[in-house]
Image 1 (cartoon, helix red, strand yellow):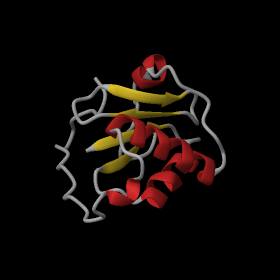
Image 2 (cartoon, rainbow, N blue to C red):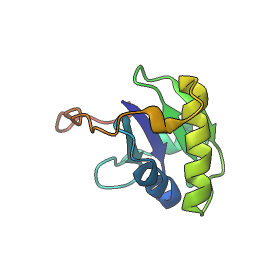
Image 3 (cartoon, rainbow, N blue to C red):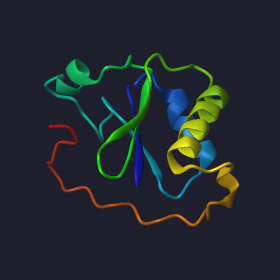
Image 4 (cartoon, one colour):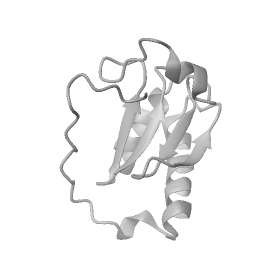
Length: 114
């Protein structure tokens, strides 16, 4: 499962993930109730603006970043699509099956970022 990580100002990335509708792509919005940054550790090390985004591979490696972000969901979707195509070496994302994979279970009380 690839993960897009953004902050509360990154609503365009949330819309972009929804628009792309890829079965292996999820979003984590730091600062939201599901991904709180109680001690501001993520804010300290993230190396992107609050509206920026990271694309993280399933093995935890950051494979792409957009430092500033964009307020336009269409632009975010185009940037994210290009990044995913480059990482997966694909010309077109339409060849990917749209069948959703089950969400990985998240243990309660476990911080997303240590």
